[in-house]
Image (cartoon, rainbow, N blue to C red; front, side, top):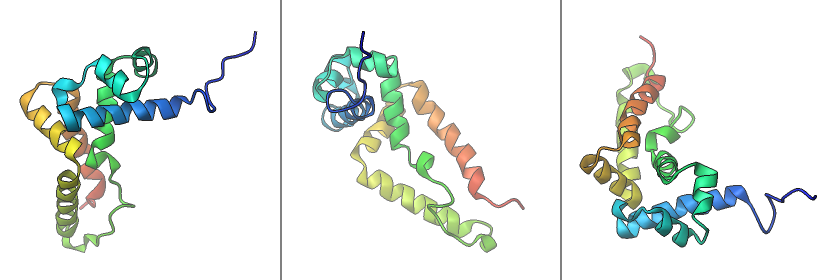
Length: 143
């Protein structure tokens, strides 16, 4: 019996996952977090909802992955910012905060995620600030 094709013009797992993640963003922009239902996500992405469970395990895990993909600090590293540490990190702090503000200002989905975090107790929304503190330490020089 021939093996199932998981890549190619008919089925591309990574492309499907990206479309599902993009559907979460589109729903957040248009309907807000209350619109993030498995049937709605699948319909917007143009796939059967079974794929959400197959590729992500649950709607929650799909949403969690989307939220992680939007997190500014997760994308930051020393390659993204070039600052002289001779001032004890003052310039780095300034640049990082200004860049974060610009990122939030331009990203409507992230604005909704932040509002969601303020209005609902969701574990992934609580994990991100903790992760930020860990990432923040990798930028600061040891004194």
